[in-house]
Length: 170
Image (cartoon, rainbow, N blue to C red; front, side, top):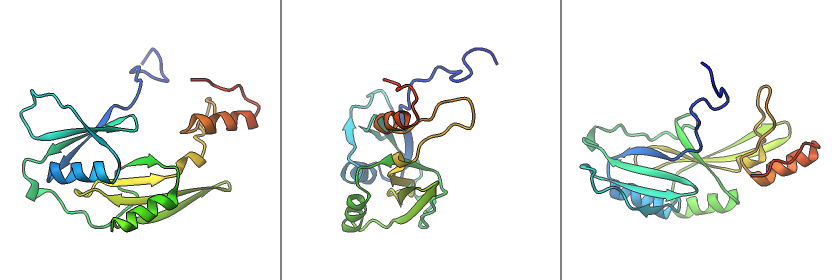
């Protein structure tokens, strides 16, 4: 394969994820009231029930299941399951809100080289896994040939300054 091997498809960002739901209304309520997404206009030409939501630079497209009763029930919260992860400012505030909302969750802590990342995992109404973390604490270190990265431009600039690397500006 020739061309730009670092980005062969010339991608610019993640646009959205699509989730099949037993009930679009229940899922909309969850994603708006728990995660802070906002409903946005969806093309009227679609001939199936669904909803589009947007926040944090990403869209979530909810699609009504054709046979909702046939969807599997997920009750065990398994951090190794497929999931989407959101960065937060305060893990304590998130954990407090989840407890107040009576949302069951699993807490996990990852340690790498003295750096700690806290994670909270829970399900949406259809069993899709959500993670809330302070993953920004952990630098993204390529295996070879690339510079150190972070999920946050602020943390990236601090890491580069500490390592005396040139600061990358957006």
